[in-house]
Image (cartoon, rainbow, N blue to C red; front, side, top):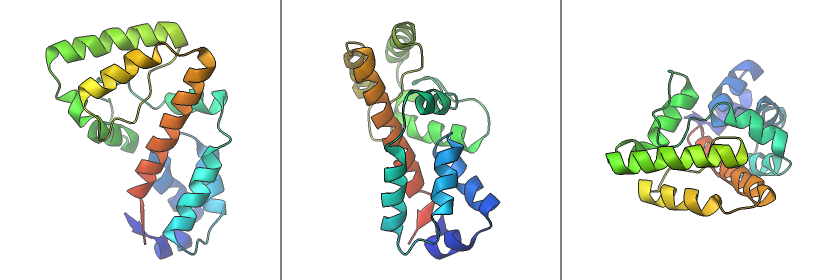
Length: 166
């Protein structure tokens, strides 16, 4: 975690590197860095949230390229994989039946929507996630894009909370 004052004065490349694990959308990070200096942490978060509001299908597809399937252990040692491992802790320790149900649900979701299922896992049990997966399989394509984008926003801002302190 870095103090706001230090974030404001980092070289651009270093500031971008800090934000990269929040979401695989370089345009978002670049815009947030261009907005420096920020007078408060709340201003950073307000700006960060506003920058997520114009995300659409293309941003969702790009961001999902860095997300593992829910319930699967993220591969690699990249910062994003490390965050996913932490966020999915409750799911990764789940029982065999839950793991199988999530694999089946992921397969149905991917066949239905053509992308991995995205949900903010932090603070949710494996059963909660499975229930949400089943419910979202009932969404129309447009409803699901909105739901997935909202989850992407939540994940991004949650991760940002771990990057910048007051």
